[in-house]
Amino acid sequence: MKLSEIPVILQEIGVSPVKKLGQNFLHDQNLARWIVDQANLTAEDYVVEIGPGLGALTELILDKGARVLALEKDTRLANFLRARLSHRRLELRNVDALDFDVRDLYCEGRVKLIGNLPYNISSPLLTKFVDYPSPISLWLFTLQKEVAARISAAPSTHDYGALTLRVQLHHRVELLRTISPTVFIPQPEVASALVSISPRNPLELPACDDQLLISLVRSSFSQRRKQLAKTLGTHAIDWERAAARLGFDTKARAEELSLEQWIGLANEIAPMSTGAAQSFGQERFPVVDELDRILRYAYRVQVHGDNLRHRAVHMLIFNQAGEVYLQKRARWKDRHPLRWDSSAGGHVCAAEGYDEAARRELQEELGIEVPLEKVLKLPASLKTDQEFIWLNRANVQNQLKPNRNEIEVGGFFTPKIVDGWMAARPEDFTPACMECWRAAREKSAINPAA
Ligand code: SAM
Image 1: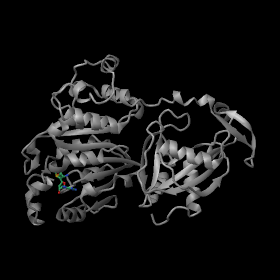
Image 2 (image 1 turned 180 degrees about the vertical axis):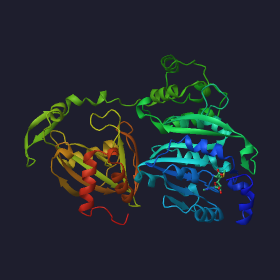
Image 3 (image 1 turned 60 degrees about the vertical axis):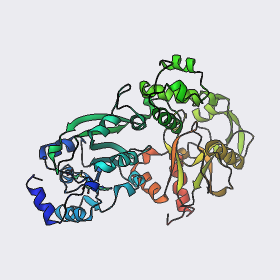
């Protein structure tokens, strides 16, 4: 949209730009094209645009063949854009993007997020939409230059802080270019910058307890000038040894540690399992026949290596809202690492029954002890990795305590989202989880309304 057209349209639709809504409209069409080009869009993409305004980017995104969901808070702008860009691939919602449920996006294939964000709420928007785990594969944001500098900062710089580490823990951030206030109407008081954020390969960095890391970082950066040995003194760390092992000075301050060193520090305090401690080779399972009768016992490697029939349990845990907890399997698991799975589950070991195994797994993985209801039994097949599976369900009222050594990450999802997610991205799930879910749905064991 040309510079001269914007004031005319705004007047026509009765909008005088509201500072509180960050209403600065992009009029530089070359820049708009350049921004959209950075997303490498194709017809395969589902783009969520935050704050489409008068549609400077929206139109160009549609030109790339992508489907677009545009979230605009201002009703007058939403109505204008709906009329101006009526398009079968565009869904325009007159909503506050802060109220949008990001989990719905798991039901789409490849999701990219684009937005010239309203400045006054760019931090909450950023924190919400860049949360982990996420169905989004690319974030392309225009932000205040200062926020862009903070999230892309390197250690030992002024901009490096808690927000930097929080975003960079699971994402790579690239500052693409700075943007002058003159490309917007009205002109904002500050310069902007375009950043591209993409998910890290989960194996790029060692696993750690994210919550612990974030709380360490927060408390250390709140006293930025203090030496870490003092701010983190309450944690039982052999400081000399940790500093030598992780390669930082014993007198270092928060801003001097790289992300890798912060992860190392969190792991000094709460070491993570690498799977080695799981003594895979030592576990023995009952080997069963086609009627699930025990034939003998064998070590785990043999059971899996020879594809022998064996036993397992899966649990679906629902919260009071009827949402089911799904877990992403830990990275060290020998089968289906980093795939999404039922709430909890595992093998039935030698000398235990299905029910005992179910109770043990719930305790080990989610730290809970709740009455379980049997749902159904699945026969051993290729789809279940030759496991007979007893599926159980339970409702919980209290918080789960996911064991970070077993579970990479987890979350509650509505059954409707799980249905859509499995249809759109089956590769995200273990085959057994898909089988359990399908069978439970068929048996109407999951609230159909949820
Ligand atoms: N994308 C347009 C452009 O580049 O010209 C407009 C960008 S303008 C910086 C920000 C837009 O976000 C405005 O249209 C504003 O009404 C909208 N907005 C502000 N707060 C919002 C919110 N919470 N949810 C959705 N949209 C919002």
